Length: 67
Image (cartoon, rainbow, N blue to C red; front, side):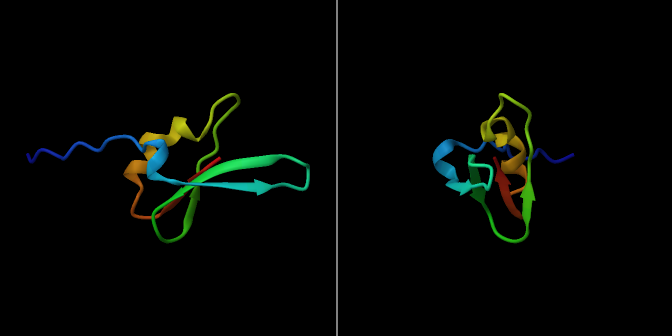
């Protein structure tokens, strides 16, 4: 069995931080990292994108975003 390289979590400065102004008046923050089709991770309240930092790192082969 081969050892796998350790994959660290996504850090705040490793991603592009974006904002979307919704029709409801909410300004939603999300991050983007990678290339290709988007994958959206949806967390519960009061969490933030940071709760998905480990999963985003693993899926860097595709475009990832998390609000």
